[in-house]
Length: 289
Image 1 (cartoon, helix red, strand yellow):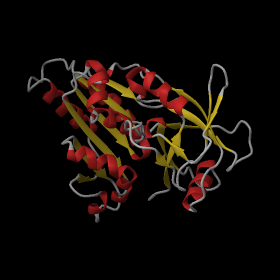
Image 2 (cartoon, helix red, strand yellow):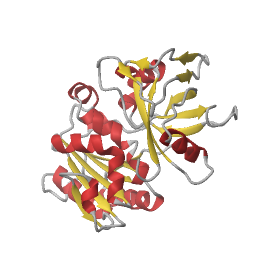
Image 3 (cartoon, helix red, strand yellow):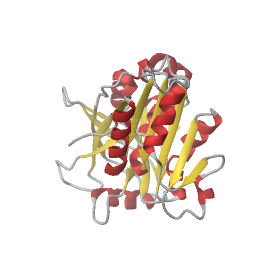
């Protein structure tokens, strides 16, 4: 993908079942990953946020050469390994990771290069999932998603859930409005999550993509997207969301609004500050090592 990002589709029933049983349906969950195809280091695990969940009972899916063909899952409790024995798996056993290269000679750079050559990863070990967001999403009628760059990764599963009638009824029974604000350096980076952005627009979710560099060709972000050039003003966006949530009463405390955020430090600082000023819950979809 553009910008040194790869989308891995992993098949592991144990992880998929654990994600479904987690609070909030696994929103904000992450796993540790290693592959001896890339490194022989026994302890070289790397953490990545889950970027997508199964889409239901589809037919058996052939895993492509750009995806992971064999996955092993290491349970925290009993260290049981689950290994796929062939190149097929059920869609309900899948989850995805969007991984961005961290620079030359890094493990993620080797991964991106490996996959870009069309070579399948034959041996992947997964530990997890971890993470349990402290926010109860079922309480909120409005969710504002604020993301920067690859920080859109943990936001994507929430959007999938919001657009899935069964999961929405189970995990988000009060949800009425979703607003997405995503800041990227280049319009072409929107291709990282093009399928889910297209679904968001078709479902009439409010999506705005802020392009901070190379602003001349914003059409690369994709059709029917609200593309804004320049940095987002998080304070103004949260204020507008609170005002909308309170139905125009800007003196009321916002009880139905939650903010999900993930991105660079400056964006997170702005989001925390806006949450404090407007007295709304900000949950950071980050993992701390």
